[in-house]
Amino acid sequence: MYIILIIYLILINLIGFFLYGLDKAKAKRKGGRIPERILLWMARIGGGAGCWLGMALFRHKTKHIRFKILVPLWTMIWAVGVVLLVFKTSLP
Image (cartoon, rainbow, N blue to C red; front, side, top):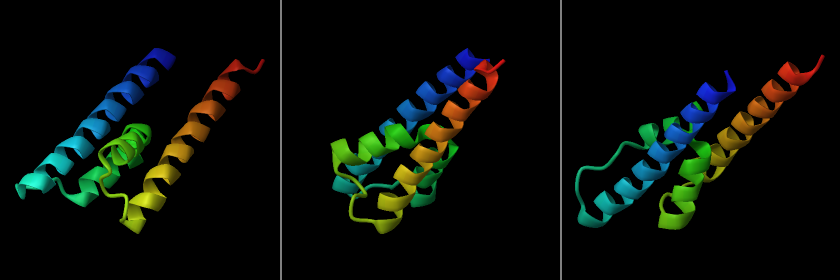
């Protein structure tokens, strides 16, 4: 079970990181942007670490208060959930 969760989290974080970089590139070119709700949903469904890293590395969406609060919040919620899952299943 853990391997599926690990693979999921790796993939969703890579996708989140990629989407923040892609949206930053599109913002510079004034092209079709990725909707903010999609970027926020990536963090909500488990890609918060990748999104947070993308925000920092690409300096993208760092002035938006929703992103500054929600991306770290959902990252922490997922982290706590995974830790609780591991401890719950490892207890006798």
